[in-house]
Length: 340
Length: 247
Ligand SMILES: [Zn+2]
Image 1: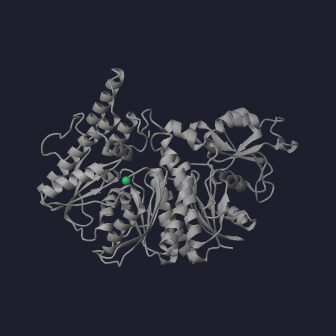
Image 2: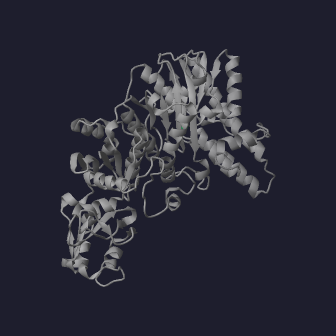
Image 3: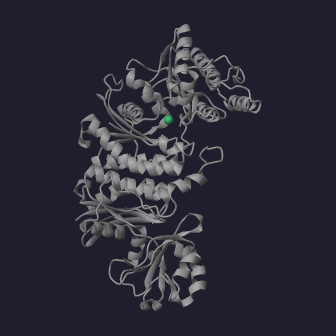
């Protein structure tokens, strides 16, 4: 299967091989080409839709060609095509979607449209063939913070979501305030390594009890104000301490709610997905708390956490194995929901 | 030579199958994002109607703009992917050229106008005395008054003496600005009929075929849209909200 992902600022193509069985015991990623536009958008401090879409058009064919060469096969060996059709930037999605439909039609093979968030969740299945639903998954990225329960393959119950900023956005904004650069996630993660997470007690928004929702704008504002007060009062500001303390506040809430959701749903497995799932502190803290309650934690390796086409091919593999297929007039849906 | 023509760059568009001397099948409709996205289905239907197998195509033709940024990208990406998957040459066609070609054997000079953002129009001036257009000016993105001033008699635009027969305006810009055109140029101007206003996929296919046979074919990797107008960096400044979040 050929996977294609262009919903934000990564042009990615991947080749995934499997025996076609529904439980996908022998699934192998033969290639996963990711041509990132991070340096292109760094000068703007954020992803610019028109710039991203233009770059996708230039990068899509080279990405597909390299994915096939890395996998050591020709297009003739491709038996199906999967591509993201939402959520994301509509102009960007349309490039990967148009390419996927054309290739599927040209090779006369099935095409399957994939939900970007579902793909993030399915990144877990690539390296953990023993992972099986039901489980609870925390999807955390620049655009999403969702707590999702999977009773079975392809079934999603969104238990909680963010009421304002996504966790990834909070990381990006704090990184900018601390002058740590773009993208913020890895920069804060790195800076926090040498910082004291208890240096500053930033607010943890647990919201009303029993709620699985998240809110990070209050925390973000608290950090911005703290930094400004330090600068105005010309007090010494330890970037590492602020980064570590901010990160701790985010991880605290994410981990607590994920474990609570797992207990409430009586599942003994929890998974992580999305770019922020690559955060070392989150993985460490969630693993610690899960172990305390005898819960197994699964997370993809960092390269599969951030946007990539292998995760799209993996989600596509499971849908095709269930006999699902999309028609070639599938529209891009920038606001596609998970339990759509 | 069997060519599949694709055009989603303008307000009307679609697909066509042509050979050297025949339009075998054509589907054209007012473009909306929805039907640009279902173009691959239309393609498959046309191929079936024509009894052509997709693998027996000899080339792909595609309008590469200027026009709607998203529309151009859908068509160009489709052409690139088909060209790559079927290992076929791709004939790029500038949308302004395709619209001008609607008025083959015209005695009047032909001026296509395509509505662009910020009330500009994409334009160029052509002589189409034969079947194919001959471009007399560079491609421009300008305001309508600026365009009309540039076409006035005896101006620096280098238009030769034969131009006193007036100018035939086509393209969605001609329709949008017809009052201004009539007010400024009176009998010197004519507006093309509705069936010639928009680019036609069969014309795009034929012109793309011509580009391929004259050595103007592009590879799937090399083909890029013809955006004309402001570069993406300039665009970026407007699209970025003050705090850096995409607008
Ligand atoms: Zn993502």
